[in-house]
Image (cartoon, rainbow, N blue to C red; front, side, top):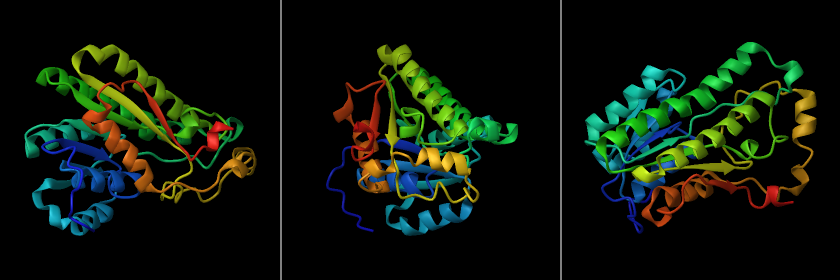
Length: 260
């Protein structure tokens, strides 16, 4: 890891990133640190957090880690309070944590799968966004919210029923918050990655045959998978002042896959 910071566009900023222990979240943590921010990386996997802390040890006390179950409202609110208590403030929150659903179509969807997906993929985003908005309003200096949605939040045939519904909801939540609080200096945007090289599908051991067949129908149009670094570059842009007039946007990052 290089400790050089050629673009310190987040100097003196404090960011909270959920799902920060691996994949896109880890890449966002690294990119924000390189840009000068202090970061709280939250994740359910303590091993990933410990490895993250070791890997980025050069940043010292600019990086803190915290085990957080984002499906739990109190845990998410404590996460924000912890960041403010540790770093003195919070300027940016990236609600990135998420899980998949074995590409289940609705006829194969059990209530417990649906409810778990909504808790992790949607409720957590609401909890984090609500806490951030309340904090930003009290502070009176605005702030930045970035929600990780998905191409499945814009195109309904790329994932399972619950995953797709949760990500469409994240997009709607993002746009509503952006409009409702634009006059306060709060910006709320969503990144919508396409197929990306992460471990989000690790738990998807038995994907639905129907779901897999349907969801992969358009894969021939995808030139390649994206990398976490390509997604985190977009997150850095949206977090920076360079995106100061971008609000309520969904930034599709899929190499043109959905353009056809």
